[in-house]
Amino acid sequence: MDVNENSPTDNDRPAGRLTCRLTGRLTDRVVIVTGAGQGVGEGIARRLASEGAAVVIAARRAETGEPVAAAIRDEGGEAVCIVTDVTTRASVEGCVASTVHRYGRLDVLVHNAFAGGVASRLEATPPDAWFQMSYTSAWGSFWCAQAAHPHLTASDQGRLILLTSPSGFEGSANIPLYSPAKAAQRAMAKSLAREWGADGITVNCIAPVAETPALAGAFEQVPTLRGAIEARTPLGRIGDPTTDIGGVALFLASADSAYVSGQTIVCDGGSFLGL
Image 1 (cartoon, rainbow, N blue to C red):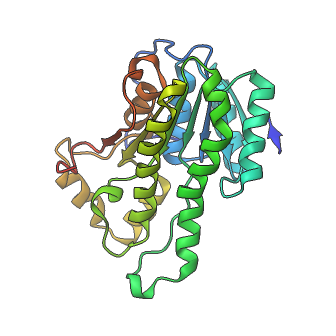
Image 2: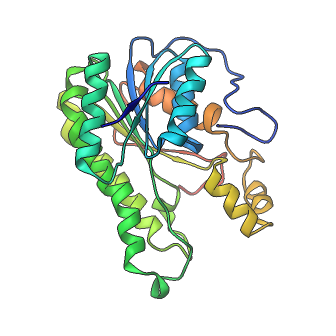
């Protein structure tokens, strides 16, 4: 396992800039965030680090993970990048082992990493698309949960947080495999919440709608998409990965959520009011 020690935004704010008051709610906590080299994962990592957590940026590529870790350190936080492929058990186990070796504990694991596919109807979707999605979402959640469990049990505040999607509730046309992959994470979280409650571990999901590189690519392909999303959202904007999604992750990672488990918090500005 390679350890490398060496941007969440909205349309008007520089990447990583926080407008909220910091409280140190995660001081002395150790957190792993997978897929933290960009987008929602980066936003969550920055937010948790800003509240005092030592954060491991578990990114598939050092080229994306190292800059995020460096930015957190530049802002006075504690972060390290560990190159991690969540589709491989050995890589996930290595990340967890390296984290515990370095910091002596693991309190929170946030599994955000996901590799999506190209939009298509089911009858035109190749089997490889399912493998790609299920390996990073369902299998990645499985590997992360197994590797983290003994350390989360040893913590007095063990937390497992999985990033799912509103599509895992209501489905999505033309990306038919995305929804079941994300729904599988919700089902796993509910099962683990039942199983791990006796160990003092909470397990929850976040279903976000946020500004990400993937969504930016979709906006380029469909110029009217941004307006459509904003129009259906009562708050009139798309979520910021650091302040909006990161705020929910902070709640679930902190002592404030000690009596919340097996839940999916939809953080979407009200876009999916039926969920």
